[in-house]
Image (cartoon, rainbow, N blue to C red):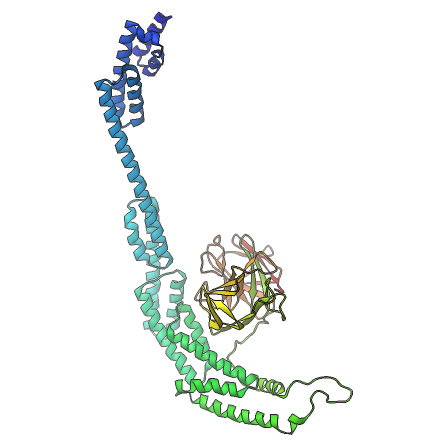
Length: 536
């Protein structure tokens, strides 16, 4: 049997089948034989030689395997020790190369992520500079091309905006800047041009206020929203218009003293607005007339029983006077066509459901409170009720009881994007202005619930709802290639839809813009939605 194994061993060695020869050399009886020992020594030398060839070719694992087999057969001979040192050196270099590759990949990933963050805030040049650390990484090359294209597009739009502004067409320049804001472009030139346009428009707003054209001033401030950044001066002008509006509301409720107080505060700030002093004089006369009516013979009439057979109660005198004043032909800034204020439910497949309120003044409170709220929350009956009103693109919060806004107690404040509103420890909302060019805002429910548990956002509709990819949309749908604009028309329960993608209503192709009624199923590209009436 030993002779047969020796013969097989010799044949395997002669044919270069060293691994098979190693298996044949395992029995101790073969190694005890003199001829077997010679063959084992020859096998060990052959393995060392083959391992050297593997090492020269960079096949580290194969060289290491031959070195181990040779050591098992012949022990730690100088040749085997030398091969082991070569293999160890190669393994070291391989580990270092792997670590270097992993380090380079991490640097490239960090550079790409950094460039993406810069791109989100419009810093395209800075993003391209950040990609230098990524070298020739494929992801970095693709990101660099994208940033270069976006930078070129933004530069072209900025050049067009400058051209329009220099030609005296600030409205066209404003439209170009709005496009840049939508693309999240940012640069010193853009900020400078925005400031110059803002300065020109605020100047026109001041002239309109001084001339008593408050409607025109309100419209111009609305156009400034397209710049996406409100300066201190524009905020002050909006507050001024809000005070004028409050004065007119006081006139409508037959409270001339309140209107006079508001106008008296504004009068020294607007010395060229001579109509303010005229209005104060008229309000003073109105106050004297109302005071005379309230203290004259009419005040002594028993108003609760006008006839013997009638138990109807007439409203107080000041309320009737308010009604009379409200119907006098006084012009207030308003839109040409007012849509009846109501709530709708927007259900977008795969995205979620949204309560949409068209009201300029929205009450939010517990569903089981003393009086019904426009948006009813599932909260304790003792939870305070808040009122959020929209005026000239700004949103104001009012509450009879103190609530926390950004962890500070208040009963009234001007809301900004990201403000945290806490009606109670378990009832919290977050105010959002996803797109600065749109007057529409949103309230995200972070600790409160509606009757429908799938609704996590309340949309406060001003002019339009933007549906599309990215965080700048009121309804985010990353599957869409562009932004779809949904607007309420003058007809109750009817909307118009503009989109670059194909629009289908109830399975039929729609015109541009498409007209949508309540309950109709709408498809925009790959997205589908339906709008229904809501009593939320």
